[in-house]
Length: 263
Image (tube, rainbow, N blue to C red; front, side):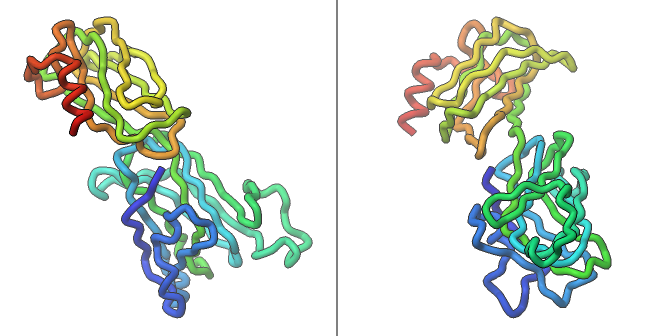
């Protein structure tokens, strides 16, 4: 997914172009790096996700790692008030294998070209920001080529009361053949699955079979980016939209779709 608003604890003074956003642009030849004067003082890097996600995995790409250090990867929610640990990783290998013939080949990384990727599995921590921190006392600066985050975005809406849901109608900003949208109706704490559909067309409709509930949740899986939603409508048997704080909408479904497309 696309990361934005990247910041870091400092920027390498002699290379002012090594800013935090270079690790969020998807280009492996670009580079972000904290200043060498900050060595030992818990350097950090963080960026905003394009919405609130249940994070499943964070992948860090390093072109050169020189010093041993422990990195902590966290997901932040609630306007930065709640930090949830995904995991930690430690690196012990040098800038190139030729520099160390005794390099431990069993370390948990995969090789992409000349670059190396560490993957940290998360436990579906929900948040809108990802953060990487170095442990105190690390004899290194924090340098990143790329950071990738994978997870499911959640859309949630209350109905303003219990209702029978005929179907959920969604208008998408972006399309994806590999991405699935999954709709779930909640009746109190009880989950009722409506089903899933491919995000390969602008208007995706998921039948719910008149399941009763008081709110709807939409999740996306298998996506490389946040699809973005122009509109989500949970419709009862009379085509009333239940998601507008319980207010009934008298327009027909066809009329609504036509108006949204024109916008």
